Image 1 (spheres, rainbow, N blue to C red):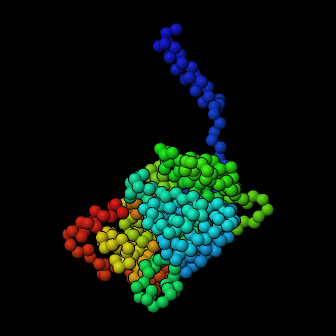
Image 2 (cartoon, rainbow, N blue to C red):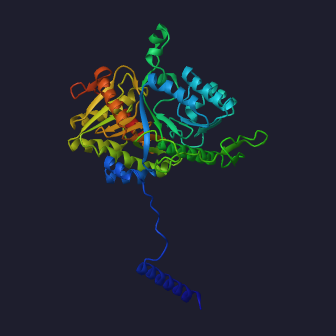
Image 3 (cartoon, rainbow, N blue to C red):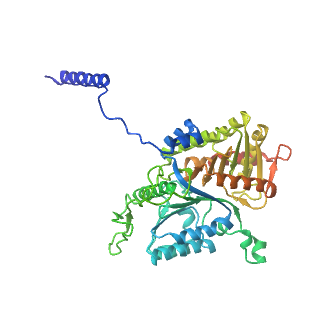
Length: 475
């Protein structure tokens, strides 16, 4: 039989088998679906469409049995950071954007060094290279303690505009602290902690910021995300270098210092006492009853993930029935997110926007001008806009109808949504929502000026307006 006839018979036989499988429902087994015991609760909270969209687009499952606490400003979360770090007994996994050689940064570094050296806790750190490289004192304390440190996007690995912007501390796979705060005085020290009149006069650039303290199954999701980042970064960073990657046998397995090649360890998953969805395994009690899901754009997967997360955030804000409250330090939103805000306003819903003023914006006048070029259309559509006057604002959060609260590191800008590694947590924690709403009321009363069409600052000059329009899309 020649090859032409043989290929024709192969085609016919494949077609017959396909028809038979369709007729008798015979073939490969369907992809299994797992029952989420919190599905009905999540659907009641989010609505069926949004529930399935978030899970499918993020690749994560919503977990139950969590306890979440919202901390506002360094006066609350800095001390809690130190307490939580000291409580860890097995593992500490940490990602950060900034780490400073100041009182706060060195205090955290010294605790981690003590945990690693004296208490034999496994400590791993992923830090953004551009903002970690200058702070060599903290780096030396950590490295001298034998702590493995990965510097993300060390020049010239990738574009310098691409950063790892997450701020996360995962402790024993059971608790997580995540938000906008870096390990520097201006994030962690409260204005009341300034020691003398001279410090008060020169001032620290103190930030208004948020951190979420989380206990329960959501910590398992963050742990899985960190483990994934650790492996992805190692494999990318050292794929063309003579560095040895070795799978550790246990969490206590240490680096072989006798080995001549530099060595990094890929550890087994941190054991968890919770199931995939948050059911408690064993005899322990659940820490709480709240739902939570991490929305984590991983830094080496941004090309695959960015479109999905843009869709998640636009869908969430368009779910507004009454009011959306947005805390966004640099108001130059991704185009699709901006359009979603306008669409929400056109439907007669309220949108309140909190951001920095020209005086408190740490990125300069051009960035403030970029924000203000967008204000007029928003105000004409019914938005309320507030600019902070007392200090810098660094909080990133979104509250929809007092039902959905998101807190994390995402600035909702083009770069945050398309290039950076970012994380937010979405929760129904009523205690955290109530505290956030109380903060909003206090901010309006004491710390913010409302911008209206009557007092809207104009961006004067052709070159300033042109520069502001050019700058915004690239921030």
